[in-house]
Image (cartoon, rainbow, N blue to C red; front, side, top):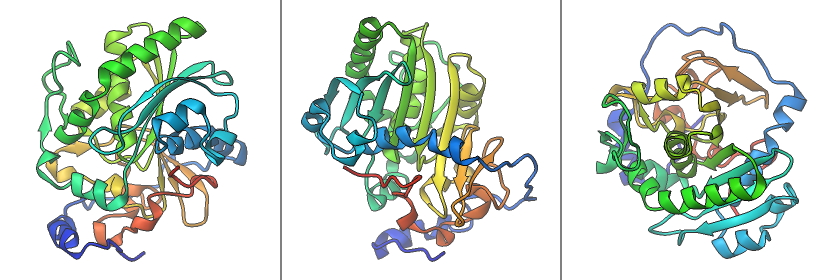
Length: 303
């Protein structure tokens, strides 16, 4: 694949990362399996929810967002917010087929997300102790993502609590694409700290690295997180940023969509097989920004 970032200045900024985005090491295909068609189809509703995160709050609350809403017609909106500029759009609702509260956050376009992943906000920091009480000091996350999460955390928490009470469920499904996936992954840590009964399922698309290895280990091990799945499309470059040389690590749970259209599971954190993103897209110049928005089983991200 050809690296196609439109902004030459941004490409020059990223050039030093070309050989550092992922380490060179032995690649293995051990334990990688291909999903069946029915298993792939099971992720389609999550793709619709993630794509609908790009819609305006008014549209989302009316649940009138075109093909995204048609894909999950029984969804019941609860609350939404954001302005799509300084504060990402978000919405919370209830999905009867999952018996779960759903939280989705707005993503952003490729050039913007890559800029965010390489500017001053790239520094790893401890999450705010008020929002994230009791976390071990070894856990660190991307400062820019933490800032974006903090702007709406209290509103989303309140809406989730309202939904759980109204619909009698302790299941919370978190989803999003790109920046939206990163914010939702932080919610996978945040919400159980304030709602101890919560059982979290995270399904993100085009997820960048959000935190350090301690952060990834926490998500892998914490009992409140029922599952973490992050789905990467072909040679999407966003999931290899920020680079591992900066201390970033993905949690386990990657599914990599191959050029053939096959969906392969990639066990472990940052699996370096050439069937998985870290191995397949070893540097940014092997990435293709046009893969970032999908399709994910036919669903393109955007409202």
